[in-house]
Amino acid sequence: MDDLITAISTADGGGYRPRADMAKDLAATLTWTAPVAPHDIVTFWLQEFPAANVLRQGALSTITALADAGIRLGIVSNGSTTAQSSKIALLGLQPWFQTIVISEACGWRKPDPRIFAMALKALATEPCDTWFIGDHPANDIVGAAAAGLDAIWIGDPDSWPGNLVRPVRIIKELPELLGLIPGIGLAI
Image 1: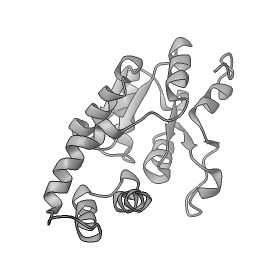
Image 2 (image 1 turned 60 degrees about the vertical axis):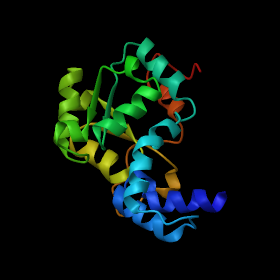
Image 3 (image 1 turned 180 degrees about the vertical axis):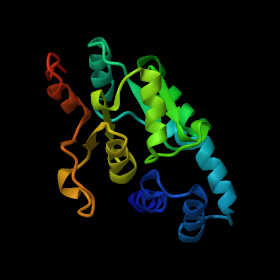
Image 4 (image 1 turned 90 degrees about the vertical axis):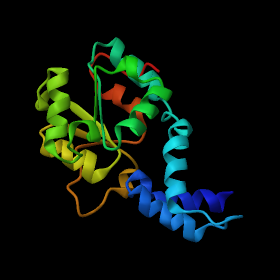
């Protein structure tokens, strides 16, 4: 089972690899009981993957605390509208967010500053007054910073790519955000 998880994770490229390329690798590298076409893998992936998503540890309590403090929340996501909307709905996130901007629906992908600008407009806020939390160094952090937002990377500080300017703030877990906001604290 660990070999299967490793093969899928590698082929998926952290969610940033084109599905057709991922499926081609999986069709070629995994042992199948019958021949399988990459197209069938993509179809299965798009139908079943959204249901396999789980929230990061501490995500719901962090989101709740931020919303209870009156902080307007938004999601900016690359991907297909169907897949991203399915994930968001299955995780029950919609009620907490005032805007959800998905790249396929708006026509721009992170790191393009226009996708961030669209979310800022919907939230009625300025870039300098807004934090963006993300897990992809180039798409999320460099992109948000280029759009004028205060970008916060969620990841292992030791794994930040050396070729990119290091963000001012790095957190390992979402609840750490609460310690950065005056008046909220780490009340989780």
